[in-house]
Image (cartoon, rainbow over all chains, first blue to last red; front, side, top):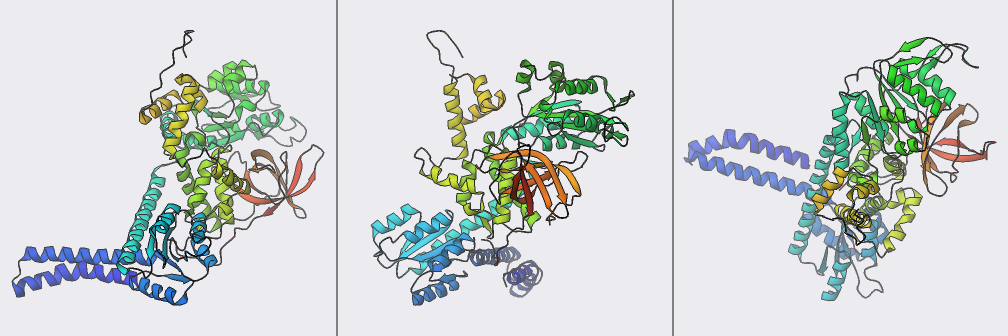
Amino acid sequence: MIVALRLTSSFIAHYLYPRTLVPLLHETLRVPFGTLVASYFVMAYATYKSVEVATLRTSLTPCIFDDEPLERDALSALISDMGYEPLPTGDPEEALRLIRSGRSRLVLASIHLQNSDPFEFLDRALRCDPGVHIIVMTADYTLDNALEAIRRGATDFLPKPVDHARLKRTLDEVAALYDQRRRVRALEEQLLKDLEFHGIVGKSPAMLEVFDFARKVARHYTNVLLVGATGTGKELVARAIHQISPVSQQRLAVCNCSALVDTLLESQLFGHVRGAFTGATDTRPGLFEYANGGTVFLDEVGETSLPMQAKLLRVIQNREIQRVGSPEVKQVNVRLIAATNRDLRAEVLTGRFREDLFYRLSSIQIRIPSISERLEDIPLLVQFFLKKYNDAYGKSIAGLTRRAQTLLLQHPWPGNVRELENVISTACITATDDFIDISDLPEHLQHRSPRLANDEDWHPLSLDEVRKHHIQKVLQMCNGNRLRAAQILGIGRTSLYRYLKRDGLDIRPHTHSTGAAA
Amino acid sequence: MLSETLSIIGSCRVEVSGWDEDGIFFVEESELSWDDFAGKHVALKHMLADGALIFIRMLQPTSLQRSFPIAYEAEFIACDVHGSHEFRLNAVQPRHGRNRFPVN
């Protein structure tokens, strides 16, 4: 119906007015041409806006919750006349179900103030989805009760009988707000496309730095070391570097060094000849030969033994390999990307990692930040994984409820992006509504909620404020030593300076009487 | 649409991730084995709550794309001689709501 109306109005606006009507009126009535064209635009705009408003109204589907059937029906009829499509119910559980499912983001709830807990429905509805708009209506209006309802989170408090003009104004305001949110969501989707770097998403300064550096080194590198905690996406960065390198048309081989014992790792990397060991029934090339001319990615390189490190050093220094059991030396030309979640410098100091190999590998080093360093990327990552798992599981989940979003932002994410991906995947499997709620998240995440909610120190701060506060505290702890603070925060000194500048923080090193400067 | 099961004959190296019985996130590499009678099995150092969801990603050294983590429900079978916990993996079907609503 709306589509038909829109098509008709746009046909009239685009064809009849300018091509037929304007020249006709100009000829017959001698109305100035400019006036006619201006009138045409005003009318076309008015038609367009009225269709837009109608579209907004029909997509809002307000729930009318009233236990008085006659009043409910009257209000439903009134709201229908205003252009909305109401969902009337006298059952509070049904109303809550409509909220939980995301079908109604606006509820007109009639309450009786003489009840023992008149705002119980309001509280429950907002617990279901803190983003829902509740317009409370009552026949026992008092200013105190109105203020109490607003304080608890109601959008408006209307006395009964309802003033039609005021109700219409409130509904139209909410509809306009939802339209605004819808447009923001569309922009976010566009942003997601723009901010995707070869399957990795991020808009935080720390991640943009990674993308920028990866782009620069991809053209020229021979060896790159990727450093970052588990689950930060080191393999994805390695694949991205290969994809934008001059050898992108050549092969990429991935080897996880921690997954295999030395003998198997050697065989996988360098290959073996028939009879080299029990079970070697045929001659096989290793990954270095397979990816000759391309790239080899060695994940968890810090887990390799010292003898294996010596063999890797030989590949890097001399570009030569030897299959297990063969005396023949083969030349290979591969780019090497290694990754580790360990502090290799510390491993060198303790003698667990060869210093010469470390310096060979770390000539170009890229540090991948953990989620805690890029909390602002969480909504973007959530959106990215939602799209991925909606496609995978044939679902059409639109997003998360506010409280589920809040919970995700409060989680410490020890498993980083991999853990977040698993959470969204789990939620997409479990959720049956259009919005993921807390109950769809893994159980241990759900149990964190009450503790945090009752935490007296917790305040609803923006991510920028949390970051600013945290940096300030760490700097104070380090007595203003920015290098030390950057190490604790797990970010580069440049990133720290950028944050300090942006947040207007200027914590100078404290001067002590002992003269110990930080 | 993602295929609901991995097509594996014999065994292959996999990365397993999920939450252990204490709700701690873990990532572990293991061998996924398959046979006609017992289905898919994996041995893990971590103990899982019965029915826990775990995510299995095949480790393919020569694959062009990073493989997709597939969700399975873990069913505890026994502890093996090395102290690892053996689990049977059951395919997980995504739940679908009966009613599909237009989203506001």
